[in-house]
Length: 212
Image (cartoon, rainbow, N blue to C red; front, side):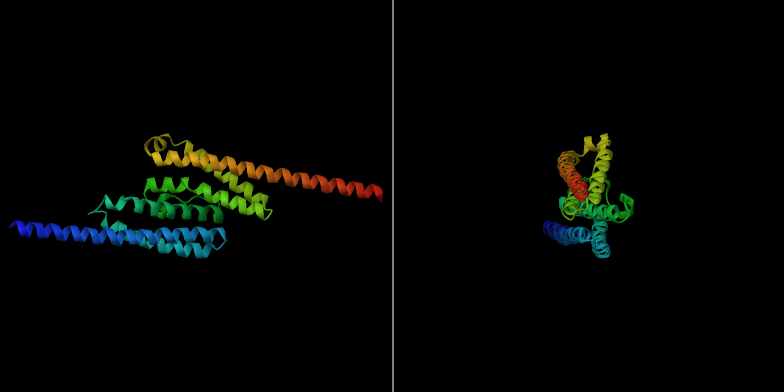
């Protein structure tokens, strides 16, 4: 084979790889966007809409699976991992809020590392749910969100091997700790405020009865 033919073949292969990469990245950006929209729908209580969005996102990961045998490294590239993490976060949040259960990586068909990193992102969304609940006076839901955050964090901290081998997980765990502490403070303040209001109302009723 002449050098010209060899180089032409290489050029074609490189072009094909670029086309595959561009198509894959476009799909992953769409999957990420759909997952973010799903999280927004979950917070609005629109669970059916969230499920539809996550179903569309999942279908886009099929393109990633097709290139695994040939471009395995590309299939785990940054934007792909980020898409899986966002999808995982949305899927876990939906299951937690709707059924108070945790979805497994096998159920949503995501890589283990992406699952753990997506799980570690859930704290921000649970804090948002807690704060939204406090704004409407729903302290019970805020307390439940905080309890879930603490439970998930406790389980993550017990994973010595994962924390040792996945540096990003350690970083996200540190952020999660600060989020939990802030949320605990917000919930405690609201609980004390409600308790004070009830005490004042009780005192006012007692004083009114004495005057009567």
